Each structure stands twice: as structure tokens, then as C-alpha cells.
Image (spheres, each protein chain N blue to C red):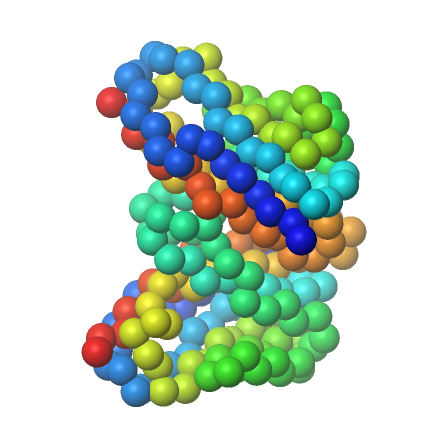
Length: 110
Length: 111
């Protein structure tokens, strides 16, 4: 069966510091991968998605970036965090219609 | 830009009552999915509907896809506290790689 992992689970970072969130998927090959951000109790904002290694589509202009160095690894990064980057970050994978989400990372920028 | 609007945004009812949550759009979707999310966790897929007019049942939950494939509803019978959560609908387009998500309905079932 397929599983998706995200780490860290929680993160507190000062403004201006770098960020690296990692997502890995097991049990499937060549999945589509997605990064979302969710404000408290609200819907999902798609940040990036990838249909293959090295292929990244950006949905929202911002100071975040994404990379896919391996088939089942998706990384979300920032060189300098802003207060507005705080939120709940979700990674998801898909091989068809449905998307399957990881447990999320709670990021607080102070 | 395609949008999915969910209503109501918030709903608080007593255990045992019935409820319906709506997901509406002016756009046609090839399929529509419903997810439930609990605080601090990722959304979990409940169902996918792909045919206009389709009805799917998952225990006390009934999902319907509109005939015109522009809307969907989720009906819960005899709600229980365990049904509490954020319910999200998401639409897919033919050949597209991404979903369009609604803003969610926050459901609270009071014992």
C-alpha cells in the first residue's frame, strides 16, 4: 500500500530564516506531487505541483520554491521566511483522479 | 478561473439530527471528490463521484453529483460527534493535473 510522509510535523522559525520541508511517498511510482498551504480551518491553496522529476509548476507567486530531486521526493523551500508564511503545509500525491494527503507540517514564523 | 462554493461555511447541530452540505459551481467538472479533515491532520478522501446524477452511500453519508456535473451535495443522517470536522469538496477537469477545492464546511456535532 502507499504511504506519504512529511517532516517535520511542527516547526517554529524566525522571520528571515530559511525553510526546508520534505515529503516522500512510498509504494507508488511516478506520482503527481502537490504542495498546499491551509489557513486556520479553511480551504487549501495550491502552491506547487509536479508531474515528474525536475518538473515544477508554480501556482502562486511568492517567496517559496519547490524541487523534486527524486521520483518520490518533493521539497518545499524558502531562502527567507516571512510572517505571512505561517500556516499548515500539506503534501499530496496522485496517480489518477484522487489525491492522498500527508499528515501536514505546522509552520509558525515568529 | 473555476470556483467551487461550499455552503454553509459553518454548521453546528445536535447529535441525531440530519444535515446537508452543498458544493456549487458555474463550471462543469469531470468528477468531484469529498474529503474530511480533522484538526492537525491531512484531509482524508471519502468518495469520488464521476457520473452526472450519481449517488453514493457511505454508511450514514450520502453523496450526490448533480445531473449537469456542476454541483454536489453531502447528506448525513443521524449525525454523530465523530462526524465533526472540516468537509472539503474538490473538482477535477478532464486531463488536468490539479483539483479545484472549495473553502470547506466546518461541521460540529454536539453530543
